[in-house]
Image (tube, rainbow, N blue to C red):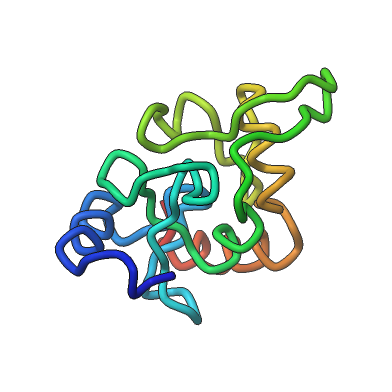
Length: 136
């Protein structure tokens, strides 16, 4: 929960992410709910509350991710780890085509699927921000 992350660590996560969700790139100022530090390896799987295990996530991405660390690739059927903002660069795994996020890797495919990055709400929101020159 939010209160379990020390303020100094929360500030570091927010600043490091440029105040944007590290999964869908939604800026905090455009979100209805505050972005949250996400445990990349959840606490229930012995993940630590430390800088290298935290990413900034919007409310939707964090709720969809839940305690997952991987998912089954819709193309290969193989179990694949999710995109990890501490280990991977967004642009190496994803590309923005219009308002849709496209996968370049298996990690991106499972992340897009599990986090619903291209659901109607995400795409509509992204399209409005892109049209205003305020996304990405």
